[in-house]
Image (cartoon, rainbow, N blue to C red; front, side, top):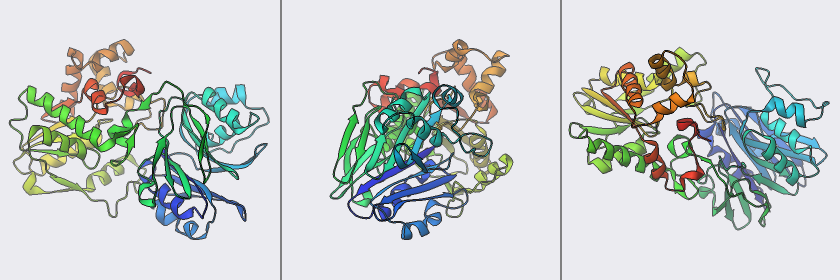
Length: 473
């Protein structure tokens, strides 16, 4: 995953750039970078590894020494960026958010044979460097960006820093957002709409799918109009988006409340809320869902355990998987008076592999819980995302749903059979849920239905990507 922030200002932009990028820290844990431009000093760039330290501590020096009125920056889970490029278009810096599935095809069909790329660890090509190379195949930035949007399978949203301004281009299908903020002497563009609010900006507008603009301190000019079709990632509201963000005018926090309410209504229809003592969220992404559930069901909301994070940032995690599980468990601190002898309903945003939620349930039983009922803020995840680097699983066999389906079917079934398990009214779905419940030692388990989740967002369902739940593009 990753997030970016760009600014065009009549005065020095580095303060706003530094904190604007920092407000995207929840979207990446590995690499971060800043690039600025000024007429006096030209381009300046810095990239640091942030795996064991927050963005702010790694870029304090740059925040005091860099100067420029134009700048872009990013935080990423994957490649080092922004990168600085010298080309037929002159020197520019570029940063991207997205996923490229057809790198080999692009290299073969669209990139000249004498091009060369720096390899990342593992021998992979830096996707942002590839995007820059694609853009350089055309006569100007506008044609180059449109070309990149057309040939890339997956998605790509782009910020390009040039001496004359910043180009911002949203993914062709709008899978990721770009929000524009405005204040008296500056404009900014970013992934998360809240990132500019404390910096004195007000919301200006969001870019549409495939829209390309150029941003200067004086204006934001549309160069390519937005397309009509959109498939924004619904998982932004479910999990990845920060609670105070909004996408397409829909609040992340409010959408999660709506999901919790929908879960409560389903449980009330079945009489399942009568025996519960408390509704709680798995911190932090399940808290809003649990508040919605408690408000709808009138079951008290509580926090029976707290996640200790002051010295355990998300990025500080050992590479060995068994140690990662241990660290994740060590973060959880029980409030015994709220656990002992209680029938708890816990809501998590989703279940991917199931390992961590299973360990959390074990932790609650060890702390004296009588029952642990689990609900999720989205339907069962059936497919690994092929459009964005969002998914916390790289293979479908990492998903607990697919492992259980294979066990129940005795083979790895095709999409038609998987679709039956995704149908919340089918017997196969019930068998899958019952098996997961048994494996992870929950008292009961229920997933949010897809129709309830889409209703919770509240925009045209055709504009929402649901691939990871039903395999539909």
